[in-house]
Each structure stands twice: as structure tokens, then as C-alpha cells.
Image (cartoon, rainbow over all chains, first blue to last red; front, top):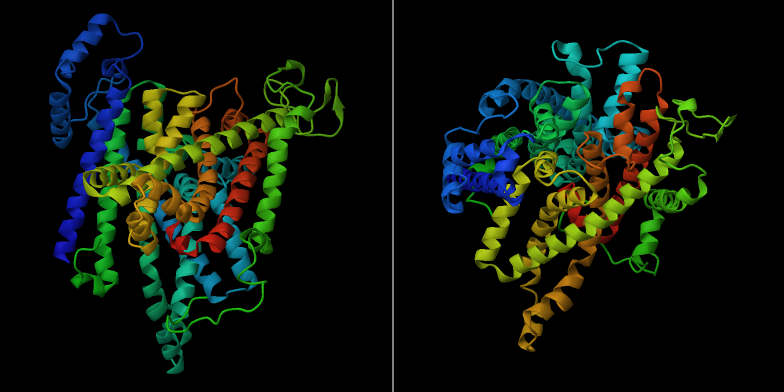
Length: 309
Length: 304
């Protein structure tokens, strides 16, 4: 297990280095990086100051090494609009995004696994058809549209929930449903497939034959074995939620990282975009590394496994 | 279909089951038929509809702004799906937006596929430093949440039709590269590749004539499932104001502009949203069915 983990950790570090490289390339691909780092009405002197402050007049290899060094030390530069360190701005917002992502993850797990289980257990029934139709619709609806529909129904027509803002639980319901709903749809389809495969195995029949209660067979024996692929997708989903949060936070005026990024692009504040991209990727990699850890807990066979492919 | 691995399915008799053409098998299931039928309607509307509607999608008419959908004529004519806050006919804008969405997807998917397949084939067949470098790049790129990457690239390239296309291709190619590389690694070991090699075929010929055709079914499935992803991403970027810019109409932008009118005009966000959902649904139905027919192994893989 530890060798496996070290292997995964090394791969994640290399991927992180790759992410930093991609961001570095993005900064230089436009030709003059200085023009991305200043506002549109900057003077020639401003540009010159930036070039010197960021060492943009140095050779590319030196810049690359310095860039990596700065990111590793947690220095993501300064926001041009707000005149504050990007790290500070992101850490002001990251809590809100995590809150949203965790609530959405809960929606995805509860709704997704429940629907998928119901569909698999009652395969071919009305329940199955309805659950899978809902799942198909869920994956096909754009999240921003689903969000607006919820706002129209629950915010405008019924007046049950606040249409936007940050604060209590009532503010969290709609954003979490929108962001989690899409992943719930995917999780339910996968849970169904995975569970159906497990339910056809011999040991399930053995369990039933020796008179175990159906509930025990389903939860103790089937679900645990069906969980691995679902876990993988949940991990990937949680990482991708930071991307989805960009849209959801914009609809509901949720003060998270995603909204920060969109406002930064619209306001041409590239250091923030750069910072959010790096932090977003770091979170994604950390989450997936954690999922690898959980694997060992769910499936003891993996604890002794040699480093995989 | 699942079960103990020791049970072999007896070969089915007759032409109907295994030997039916893939197209037939595709259409045999309700999801395949519904998907194809929906797509036929959508394509007809997107590419033919614009010639039928009497309105210029950009023409403003401030005397009939925010008019609800109706069959009765206003002073200016019938607005089947109503008008927006500038008095523009929503149906006309919808059809143009639909065409742009479809064209975008039909351009981005082949380009991403070409890039990903070429990279993946060379990576899997050659191995070595190119393989290592390319796969690490793919890993790195897939570590950045897709929409976040798209937003970051937009920040650099700017908005506009070609820029958005480039953004979506950049976001789309790694999925293909990874799958193709894995397939090629397996195909490389097969006898027909060794045979071609022994006969003196060049690497490019082996890849082009012998490996590529074996990748076709998988690519067809991945491509079909990539189409709705592109449509959603383009709509999301346009919704955020980072995609297709006015005056060119796009479905995402139509929804965004309706955001301030949710209280008065439900039809403004609902109609373009239904259109996007139907397009994505149709491609998903078709893609799912194609996967079951052509490449069932991909089932656990999820989306590109």
C-alpha cells in the first residue's frame, strides 16, 4: 500500500508541475505576458515596471524556474484590480466554494446512489425506467438553465427560497441541487450498472441461498463491491465541481472561487485566473489522491497490491 | 448480460442477432430510434429553419418587446415563440443559435479527435520520451477542471468564434489521446501488426492502414458522446459572457440575457434551454446506444 501511495504521490506531483507549466505557457502564448498582467489603460512605464518586477526581461528558462519557485512558495502574484495578493483573495473565497462543493457532493451521493440502487434492484420495472429517464435528463440539462428554472419556480413563483446570495442553509439548497444534480445523474447510472454486475455474481446467490435477509445481501455484500467504480467517479466529480462551480456561483451570486475567476476574466485580471487555475488543479489532485486512500479502506485487496499501471 | 465468466454464451443462430448491420442494431432500440429522430428534426431546424422564418434574427422592434409566445399576429406578424427585450423574434434567434451550436460541435469534435488520435497513436506505438511527455501533459491537463481550463484559455486568447473553437479543441483532445494510446498499446501486440511489419510496411502505413481502422468504432462512440459536451461547454461559456459575443446569437447568451427578466418573461430563458437540452439529450441517446452496439467495453468510462 505504501509503495502504491508513493507511486501515486509522485504521479500527482508530476501532474502538478505540468499544470504550472501549462499556466506558464498560457501566460507566454499571447506574445507579451506583460500585457496580460496589466489593465488595458496601462502606460508604457507601467508595462516596463511589470517586466522588471516579474523578471519578464530575463531568458525564458530563468523565468520558468522562478515561476515554479514562486508558486511552490505560495506566491501567486498580485491582482491588478484589487491590489491584493492573489493567494489572499483566493483563500477568502475558497471556503464558500468548498461549502458548495461538499453540499453538492452530498446531493450526488444520496440522490445518485439511492436512484441507482432502486433502479438496479427493481430492474426493468417502472421505478427503473423513471430513475433512468430522470438520470438521462439530468445529464442533458445545462446546469445554468436548470438553476434558472429552479429560481423561476422556487424563488419567483413560490417564493420559498432566496434567489441568490450567501448565508444560511436556505441559500445553499438551490446551488447544491444544481451542481450536485448533474453528478447525481451520472452516479445513479453508474451505480445501477455496477450493482447489476455484482448482483449477478455467485456469492450473491450463495448469500441468498443460505437465507440472509435481502437487506443484508444488498448492503453488506453487493453495495460494498459495487462501490469502487462509483467512488472513482465521485472523486473525479468532486474535482470537476470546482469547474462546475464557475457557472453555479455566477447564477446564484455565490461568493466563491468560480465567480472570482469569471469576474477576473471579464475584468482582464489575469493573475487571479492563473491563481484559481493552479489552486483548482491542486485541489483536484489532492481529492483524487484521497480517493486512492479510501480505496484501500473499501477494498482490502488493494492494500497489499503492487504499484498499479 | 453480466454473470459468471465461465458461462459462454452460445452463438446465436440466424441473421437477425449478431450479423445485423450496426446501423440496424442501432435503430432497433427505442433510445437509438428516438435519438436519431430527434437529431433529424434538430438538424433540419438548425440548417433549414433559418430560411423559413420571415424575421431577421438581429432586427429589433422596440414596439413589441418582451412579447409572450402566441399564435395571434401582432402589428408586425406572428411571433410563435415571442420576442425578447429588444423586440427580436425568439424563434429566428433560436434557429440561428442552434445552427451555430451544431456547427461548433461538428467542427470541434473532428479537430479534437484528429489531434488526440494522432498524439495517442504515436504515443502508444512509439513509446519512449514522446510517450512519457505526452501522457504527462494529458495528466496535467485533465487535472485542471475542464471549465476552469476553458476560462483560463479564454482569458489569454480572448472571445470570438475561432478562439472559442480553439479553447474547446484544447479542452477536448486529451480524452481521445488517452483512450487511443491504451488501444494502440494492445493492438501493437497483435499478429497482423507483426505481419505487416514483417512484410516491410512502414510505421506510417501500419498505423494508417492497419491500426486506425481498428480504432474507428471506439472513436465513433467517443466522438458522438463528445458532441453534447462541446455544445454544453459552448453554451456555458456564452452564458458567462466568455463565449460567442453579440450580435451573433447563441443559445447560452440568450439564456444569460433573460436572467434579468425572470420575473416577467419565463419564455425567454425556458425556450433556448429546452433547445439545448433536446440537442444534448438526442446526442446522448444516440451515443449511449452506439456504445452498447459498437464498443460495450467503454461503458464504465463515463464521458470524455
